[in-house]
Amino acid sequence: MNVIWRTLLVILGARRRARRGKRLDPTAVGSIRLTTLPTDIDILRHMNNGRYLSLFDLGRWDLLIRTGLFDAMKEQGWYAVVSSETITFRRSLELWQRFEIQSRFIGHDEKALFMEHRAVVDGEIYARAIVRARMLRRTGGTVSNEELFAAVGRPEGVPEIDEWVHDWAAASALPPVRTTAPSIWN
Image (cartoon, rainbow, N blue to C red; front, top):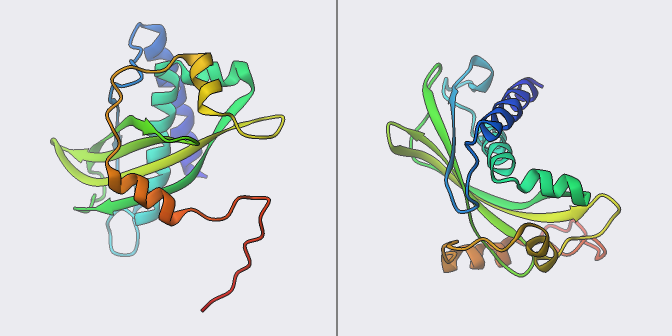
């Protein structure tokens, strides 16, 4: 529940920054500053591994709002859901440590958008996540990239996605929702 308050603060801050002319180009790196709180810490006295992904959501909110994508999604009746993500840890974030969440769109495939999030302290990467997200309609069904780009424009200058990201996305995919996916352990 405590991440909801951070989420609301980030949303309000992103809206304020956008109103003040601090909008972001779709290929820009968005950045927010946070502090590791007692509710982020696990029994080993560093940030819990699961908390990183929750806090990276905050970077996604900031980026969606400041690029204008959130307003376009709301207007169209669309929303984004994470379909897969992977995270790698390099160093631990300690209690009360200040850090930055950096977020950037890194490309797309035929069905989804890819983002990279980083937890950064003094210019050093502590953790990095790659997130694959799909756009869905509130009325049901998925939004194709063609529809998305028709509504918001196709961003110029998005870098090519590393081949391993495509391989990871394919290897980690589960069957589509309309296909059965029984839980059978080998």
